[in-house]
Image (cartoon, rainbow, N blue to C red; front, side):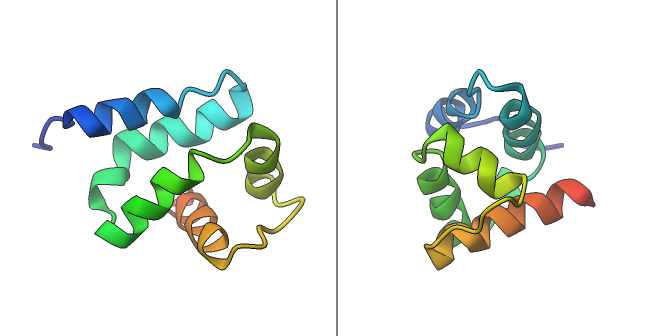
Amino acid sequence: MTRPFTDAERRLRWQCRRGLKELDVLLEPFMEEHYRDLDPVEQELFQRLLAEEDVDLLSWFMQYLQPEDPDMDRIVHVVLQRLAS
């Protein structure tokens, strides 16, 4: 049984709701199913990722562009890999 979300995690879960369906279908399931399994560094990167603009997130997740920041590139790949499995 998984532990309930903390208050901070509930706020992050809300931030995953972007209003752009393409992002919602990636970010919300990732938060629900994989976020709690990340190491603390990756959790911090995911939090930083959610502060990015939707247009950038969409470009990165659709792999049209690669983030210039290596940390953002890392967490984008983590999200895509975890959702693919």
